Length: 129
Image 1 (cartoon, rainbow, N blue to C red):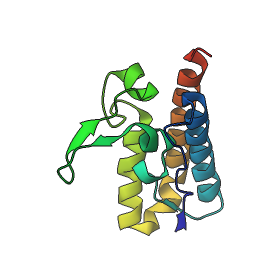
Image 2 (image 1 turned 90 degrees about the horizontal axis):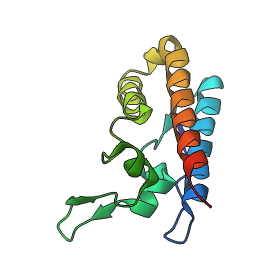
Image 3 (image 1 turned 180 degrees about the horizontal axis):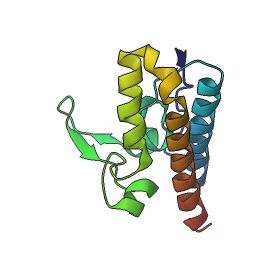
């Protein structure tokens, strides 16, 4: 298993910068898998957009939403619902639980990453400025 670089976006990062960092994350995930390893830390902690836009309330675990996130703006849903990320997440959990699945699921995992990259690139192209 190989860790993904943790996100470093801040409130000052532009959406374009945060999207590019997210695209880079999925490219890195593909590289890790192509080298025969498997990425861990693939969720919020390594997503620049989540770091910039996820809002939690004063009660521990109380999620208030990802208001302003370009992905939420595109889908109308929170936590990247309706994007390839969810299929990647489900497959990642299965592989983390049983690493012997990696060889059989490698192509599927990389294809899902390609779908997410295309999705994020589309959002990035639609941004003004």
